[in-house]
Length: 118
Image (tube, rainbow, N blue to C red):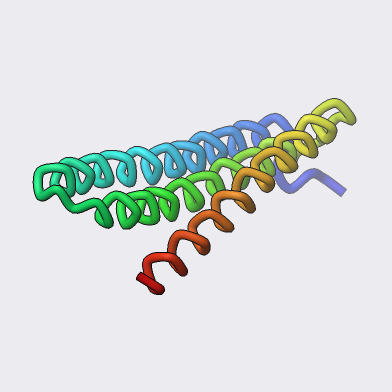
């Protein structure tokens, strides 16, 4: 049975998708950081101490989403004929990014509950 799509072509398509997904993650992180910076400056000018916590929560949500996009790009990268080395790298990257995401999400929830209590 002939291949539906030659492996070389499939790799090129997947590589393009990886770049698009990783670019989306970078754009999300940049947009969040730029917006958070503006909000930080506004809070500093107003002297709003609680505003900094709100800015951290805002930025944390963007970082979490951006990390998810980056992880999706890593998963896509190993979608076509992965070697054991690539699978090992994906496992290490996924573990690190998942841990970062977990602790970041936990910090966001902790800060959110402190803002809600105060």
